[in-house]
Image (cartoon, rainbow over all chains, first blue to last red; front, top):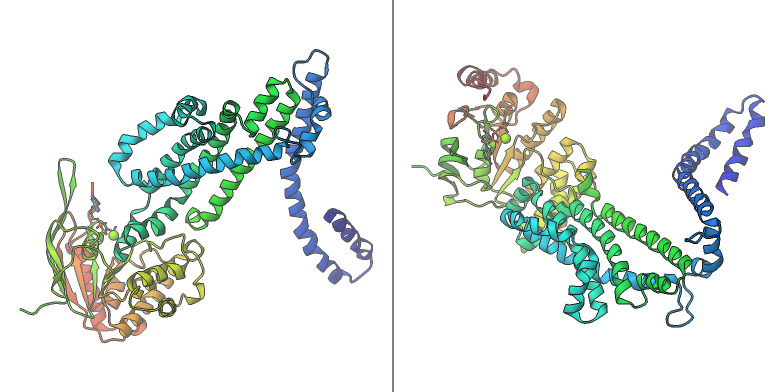
Length: 298
Length: 265
Ligand SMILES: Nc1ncnc2c1ncn2[C@@H]1O[C@H](COP(=O)(O)OP(=O)(O)OP(=O)(O)O)[C@@H](O)[C@H]1O
Ligand SMILES: [Mg+2]
């Protein structure tokens, strides 16, 4: 809409330019187009390449899977068989016949609990560790090893400990996402400039004030890096955990679709997972940018 | 013996180091009166910041003590407010919030909320930074940052104001402007001030006494010079004053003839 508006305005002065003394007329038009053009150009440069890529991927995919005997569904087949899942995320026809939007929400709720706990515990533990060089030296190798344990490897232990699938799934998310939060927070605390500590000392801030007024804001860029890695890991973990623990989450849906050979549904579910994971990452990044306005630029 | 307001009593400082210790200060002895403006001048690396940090309580002295009103001080506190060499404002707080944090902390039980706000604004206005109260340190110039740092220190109503090369990183014009402001504030509030500098003119213009430090390692007070210039001092008038020129020459002689800066290997 704005594009057509811009064009009609651009055209207007054109005939009058040929006459004399129309320079003042042209002036008010310039700021609008000058303001709109960069916006449009920005939208085009960020929006067009992904669109082109998407179309290309769909074309190649269609070509590879269109011939008879192909093992995977083609885009047209997915559209034909799973259209209701794509166009209606929030239908509800009974216990296991619900839209993928609902399933994602259930999974997000689990991630919210598990990752929320990991964030709070991770920042607190990281703060404690970051204050002591020896704790850092002693614990860092342990964390670096535990950090690499894949989410699913925690599941049997977790099931054995909790004897219930729901807390087990949450625990797996917690234990997967806590390490980067701890490690990054500890590094952030270690890197608090001596100047800030001096200011706190002259003001005689007590330890609680020091924590809230100096430590957290100063380490915030590091903390948010940890949180961003953590949320990505927890989204990886939820799908894996739900495949095994059941329920109504998006992970279980994939498992269920596989068991009943509904390959197109799986592809749609993958898209949901990818998009939601992307949005989660952006959400934490945005929260980080807002929270570290001052620190990052200093 | 007459007792001084602030006394640095035979202070030694050595930093431990692998296989021994680096002796930075040896037997620094100094007495400062209430309301006095004292500059400490010396070559880079001689231990001026270390000495100031000992007075502030941020670094413990290896031997000797700092006495303020006859009481030993060995931990930091708002009675000895510091303006740090590199402003040290908290970048996530606005100018107002930086000063307010200090005001809230020092006057929490004494002043009401409204009074604390007024006091914060009064100190920002004192350094003419009231207009930029809502700016963050990253959004203001170096001179403005230093002014907010001074406002923060003044707002604590310190017994002693410690300035560590407060104008070191500023251009000459801004520096002159801030020097005038500091003189005005000192005239108005009669604070006791210790200022570190390595600018000879700054030292002579602002100080009642100039403490000249020898080169490190193991630096000590080489000479103390009285500056008997009447106040208020105006930089233009004073520039041709014979007393001023004599003091200036004395400091220059100390720094560049008797204790020339030797590049550490
Ligand atoms: N924490 C420390 N550990 C070991 N040595 C230190 C420490 N702090 C300072 N020093 C040493 O003490 C000496 C004096 O340092 P200081 O910062 O006090 O110098 P300065 O006179 O303030 O110099 P400048 O004018 O450059 O600010 C230097 O040689 C420095 O290397
Ligand atoms: Mg210094």
